[in-house]
Length: 329
Image: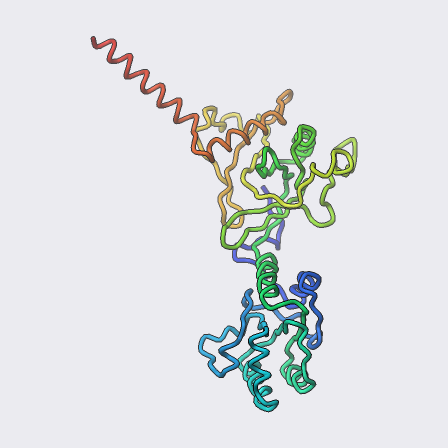
C-alpha cells in the first residue's frame, strides 16, 4: 500500500486560525471583528480555554496558546470593573501571549478594547451562541482539524457493517469487486483514493473520499459512475471506521507465501495503528466478491473471540488423546 507524500502524520496536523474559522464559521455563527490579517497564525494548542483565573491576575499555568473563550461569567466579571481596570486585565492576557479570542452571546466590544486587540495583533471573533455550546462544538472542530491524516491508494467499502480497504496493484479488480459488493447491498466509501484520519483519544481510523469524489466510481470500459444515482443513497457512506485491509495480490507472486490454514495474523500499520490485513490471491475465475464477503465475516468472528484454527486444533488434540487412551486399553 502506498501513502501519498506530504499527507501522513502520526502526531496530528497543524492548522491556522483561518482554518478553524473556515471549518467552524457556519456552525458557531462566527463573525471576525478584528485581526483578519492574522488568520494565518497557527493554533498552537488545539483546545479552548476560559481565562477566568487569568482575568483576576493569576497566570500560573495560563494556557495562552489556546483559543480564549470569553463567556457569560468572564463578561460579568469584566463589566463589574471600571473601564481602566477592564482594559488592564485584557492587556495582561495579551502580554502573556493570548492571540485568539471568541466572545460569546454577541457581546459588543468597546472601541478601546478593539484598539487594544489591534495593538497586539490579536484575532477577535464574536458569536451569538451560548458559552457552553461554543465550547462543546469548538472541541469537535479542533479535534477534527488536528487529527492525524493520510491518503492511501485503495477502494474502501462497508461490508456487513465493517469498513474494508481493498488495496493492490492497478488492474487487479478493486473497483469491480467493490461494485459487485455494492450490488449485494454493501456501500461505497471511497474509490481508488481513500482519505484516512486517526481519531484522537480512541486511535480509531476512519476512511472517507475527498470532497470532490464522494459517491463516484470509475470502472474500466464503463467510465465514471455516480453510485447513489444508480443504487440509491444507502449505497454510499460519507465516512466509515477502517477495521480490515484486504490486499489483492497476483497468485504467481504470493503462491509460496500464502498461509493456507489462516493461523498467521497479519497487520498493516497506518498512522501508528495496526489494522488486520488479509492477502487474497487473484487469478482467473476466482470470485473476489464472495471471497471479500467471507473474509469480512471471518474477521467479525475473530473480533468476537472465536478462532476456527484454535477450535479445530483443540478438537484434533482431544480426538488424538481419546484414540491414544483407546489404543492403550
